[in-house]
Image 1 (tube, rainbow, N blue to C red):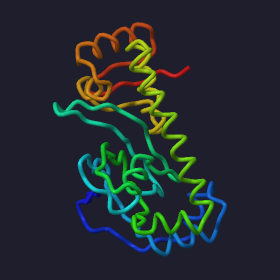
Image 2 (image 1 turned 90 degrees about the vertical axis):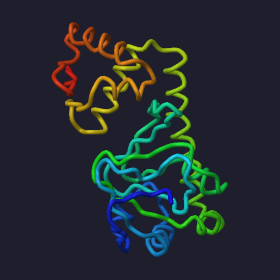
Image 3 (image 1 turned 180 degrees about the vertical axis):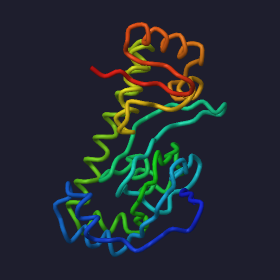
Image 4 (image 1 turned 45 degrees about the vertical axis):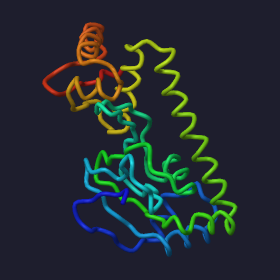
Length: 223
């Protein structure tokens, strides 16, 4: 099972909420079908929605909350890929559900998150019957591919100080707060570098007046 929750919180799906959150999908009948065949699950903050090495048995669509998607190597080092918001889906999940492969990424709820779980048995059926679902899947692939290419470009071509600032800005945006809680080591894991490098670069950013550092917190100074 690829989805983890401390309690069984699956519930029927409210069509009106699906219709509102997935306004980018113009087909009302498709959203009705999603509501009928799907189930709602509430995932507490910090819980994994999807784990690497697990088969995906239900396709997660985000109704509310925020989700961080990342990879992890054998040594436990993380590489941040992208965030998911309400009305979005994970392209990697879509690919794995269609091909029945194990997940290669992990997805973690940053806050209490509501997800609409669609059984993978319906994926092909939705693709055949609803052109709007096909367009949504293609759009999701494109958006997530752009984000992953940006991650690759950051690693290959950008300096670590630029990558760090970009990471802080995206995290602040995802949290709706300019105060980011976490240790320098945790950030180093996500950017696949050392704690010493992150600490040195954060001190440089603080000297430039771009961040304010305190114990296990970084305040991003936005002009």
